[in-house]
Image (cartoon, rainbow, N blue to C red):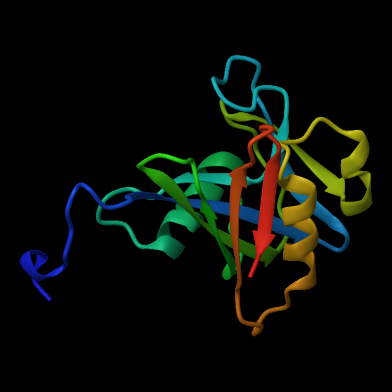
Length: 165
């Protein structure tokens, strides 16, 4: 279908596509502790990932981000889609990938330091606020399962709400 028939108008809610990658090693996940100079999430643990570049596919983006941020490769698969409702346009559509560690030592980048973190240790660490709930859901999804769908937003009291469909 040509662009003229897509129904794209600037008064509609727009989304920025991003990937999030969570490489698993038994009960541990490879997380990135944001570098102190980062504008967002400095000093906090989060998954790997970033923006999908124009002309790039989702899986290709996830593989590129993983390689750039860790020097690793993994057999990634889509385990979820998270709509980050910012309350304004554009919002973010986060495509969540996971895969099992296939060996090799992660190599840190300017993004921050890399850490293998036990799933049950997240409550005692500085993390991005939706990470514990999101990682619990990721951990429950197995290859071949349908991906989960979720929406995150802030309520009137500025508390994060993470809803899984």
